[in-house]
Image 1 (cartoon, rainbow, N blue to C red):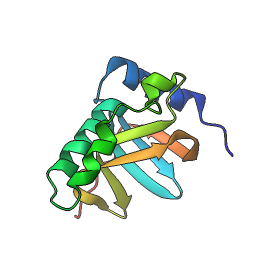
Image 2: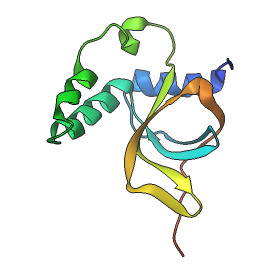
Image 3: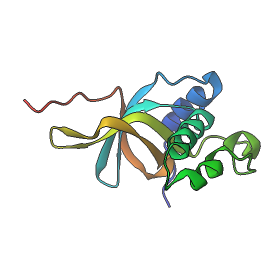
Length: 124
């Protein structure tokens, strides 16, 4: 098991403490490049729950993301273990998937490279 990058943990901690969703980040995990903005875990979970609630087939899963659970970071204490991306894309060549941005949760210990900012891409 790899040791998480302390600087990246500090970035995630700051996002959590400020409750800000303005930090743009690009990471490489498992050979995949993900770029977007970080959100606090609670905000990310709330947004995922909203999306699921609006789905006829997936609505029953929405409560999983909003239930008060002891594994929520705030109750666990300690530093964040995951990055919570919103308005994020997986970069594949010059294309970002999904086009409108998605919600991704990435284990910090699985990040092999990262940079501040998000990458622009175009089909030109």
